[in-house]
Amino acid sequence: MAESDYALFTSPDAKVERASYPVPTPSALTGMLKNLAWKPPIRYVIDKIVVFNQIKYANIRRNEVKSKVIMSKVKAQMKGEGSPEIFTSEERSQRAAMILSDVKYGIEFHFELTGIKSEREDECEEKYYNIIKRRLEKGQCFRTPYFGCREFAVKKIQLVEDFKLEEISPDLMGDTDLGFMLYEMKFEDGGIPVGGDWDNPKFSDNADPVFYHPHIVDGVIDVEKYRRDLKC
Image (cartoon, rainbow, N blue to C red; front, side, top):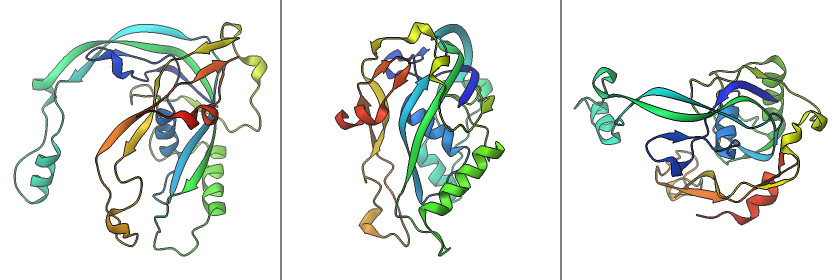
């Protein structure tokens, strides 16, 4: 279970001004979980999303920067050449955003082993299961978890045995078609290092968006069901 005052799961259709999807994307929730516990040997997979609160929007204005740090300049600096930094005072731009307010989600997930090995010899699913469970029980994290954008921090995370579906807002009852939504970014290498070298893995940075077409039924999105029909 996770709650926050605000959330912003940006839809790519919004172009310059940000507008949130009505519900979280699986990739956004995967990113949130990585802030709690993550190691290269594991990959999170979202199976179900439960939306408890009525979907409400709020309009705000946010300060953003107009440009991005260029990867080629970062690589050049690593060789002692160039300078990749951006000065926000020169690049700042104020933009409107349509965000979600008063959000509460139930997240059902599992993890898979990626094949990447660490220097330790005790790699197994049970080890990572206990690490994740312990962190969730104690409310620990190594970075502040957030919903979509870092300024919208998750204020409460709780590990539960079962979701109390009777607490779902009556406004979410029924079957609602959510249209096509971003599922994840699919990397060109498919999670396999260049040349299949798992001892010294190097991965591709090239990725394409993958979309899925979910329905929210009585407040619940069965991500596992809709994952069968992903679209690039």
